[in-house]
Length: 189
Image 1 (cartoon, rainbow, N blue to C red):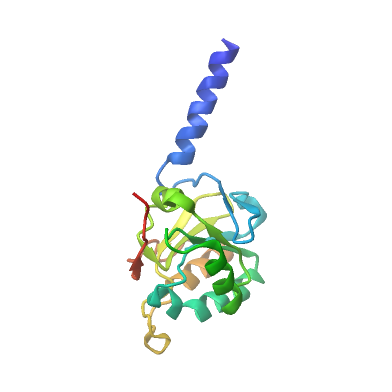
Image 2 (cartoon, rainbow, N blue to C red):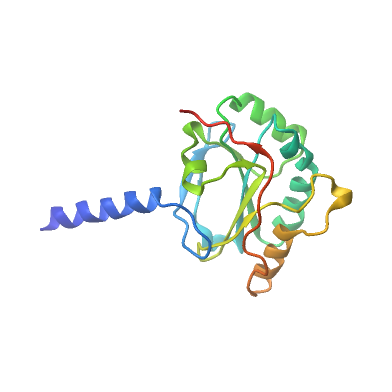
């Protein structure tokens, strides 16, 4: 009986790690290598007020149009207890390129390499940039774009910042989902 219980727990754990990510549902932790080769664990949700997971790219012009904004938002909200983690799932972008890109654009957050796009698949991330915000209880509270315009002068809605402000104030996120736009994630297989 004891062995069977262990097997059942392992099956439940495996199912959670492969479960699709959905609004208002718990998000299973994950680990990926940073561009420097060190493994970074994402999922100790309670150690931060919120965690923003940004699917980004080095070669996508739309993702690159957001580099300065991503760096600034991470700096501003990082000081308020929000953790930022970049994830690069594009098969053609290697760790050397990712490292240079992160340093060039002043990213204060790790940019993890998602070989085989396993995490992008679990999150069902389609484009770069695309953002997922998890609260300190491990529940997905926002998914979508950073803001509503590639051109910073035309931004009318800053839904990522609105979601973070709401979570920091212990209020419900006003808009839980928006349509992310950008370059498609270049997957393997």
